[in-house]
Length: 256
Image (tube, rainbow, N blue to C red; front, side, top):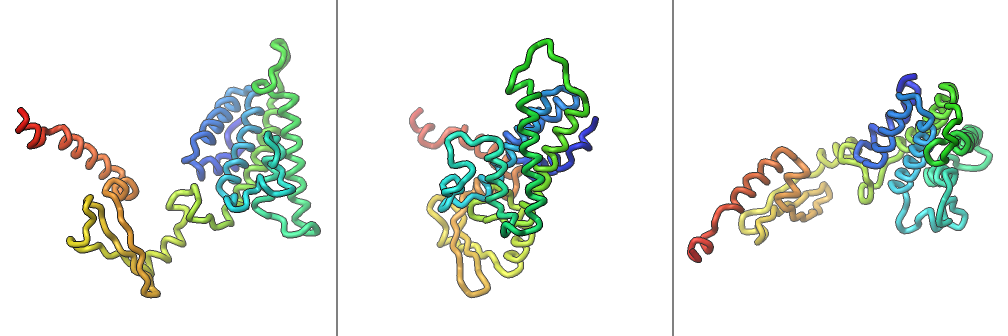
């Protein structure tokens, strides 16, 4: 068996490469799957739940969080695996109405969710310990669990990619907004402040000129600018500043 069995999970993990827990769960999944261990079933279920929780955290409206909805699947203190998957589907509003033919497709993914959860309950060796002398499952069982998990994650990921994240509260990186970035860069301009307008702390004063003649004033610390634009330059500046900080000041020299 190879990683070709779960391309959707790999794609989701690549997209959210900055999510530490998701990456750790994926590493466990790959390791257990490659070693042909039944624990990959636990990891597959864990990855699906982790993916759903990540999407909910990304898309949820803080003014009207899904956990507060009257019919929310995750309104209880300890939502189940199925609850998290259901909440992710609900939050993305994939089906517009009950008679939508696409709801048939959705129902099949719910069936996969139910099957994966039951599969884990019966076969899981990590979260549901088994007798030490029990036989391992076949490669077919492990592959079936991975295929079910991959189908759910792929469906949710593709649906998510069709949405435009909210730039104010997103956990997505700058590169996720390529088209929006291009529009801003094409029609807006940056103007640095004059020396007399410099911040007393040495921060950069910038005005963003908008096409409607409005301006957005910004104050940027050197460290924030370097960290966001050029990490190598940030490191170079840090080293230089550490050396400068280690040098004796004029007050130190006078005291000696």
